[in-house]
Length: 296
Image 1 (cartoon, one colour):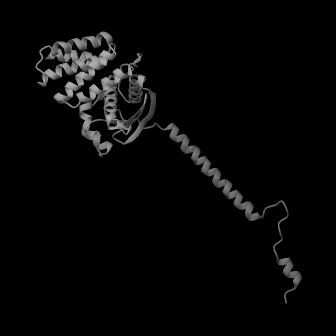
Image 2 (spheres, rainbow, N blue to C red; image 1 turned 90 degrees about the vertical axis):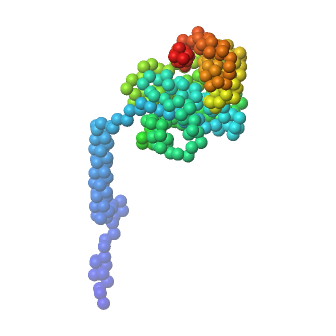
Image 3 (cartoon, rainbow, N blue to C red; image 1 turned 135 degrees about the horizontal axis):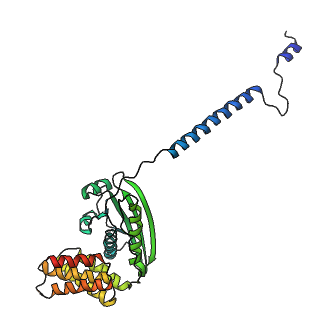
């Protein structure tokens, strides 16, 4: 038999209270050393990234605003989302050095399921703006996002909600934000977009948007209905310069497309464009339309 005393002496002596076994101390030192190495490497890598030049974003020289989606669950409100799309395109076109695709060219992509890179390739643009419009009672909410079409990467996104009376200035604000974001990549931005200061009559603005909606149908019935709504808009708000531009375009197009034989329409078109400039000298659409009339 093994002597009980020898068996007791051969047993491991228990650690004293308040102390750690040698193996535990050794493991703790290993873990601490490993943590120190990890932290040091992380700091070195972070410093290297900060010191290294970041890749520059590819320059954006062209953009397409896809038709804003109507979230009002009311097909009758389609004119409103289409009208806001048209105004956003118009405002963005004021940004110096930026080529903006026309509403007519983007309209076929209203309900498309094609991917954004493919749409951008077909339209020949560097970036895409897409968003939504929701109108409820006297409030309007717009969401918009700017996407680099080459990488399919989101560059900017925001949402806005305003009283319907401020819808026009809201559209200017959205365009200004987008142009500002693109401006970091543009070769030059000549000047900031103006933000409309005047308060717009909501009923006049609605008539104006309906006029744009029917004008974009590009047929005689649409032009005649557009004329009615543009005339309603200027009657409701005689200071609404853009509505006069709509009238100028509609009067001439009715003659040019053979929808009307009234010889006075060309003269009315010029008078409407001049009235628009009288109200707002900075209105590029009015200057452009006078140039077109001079050409014809």
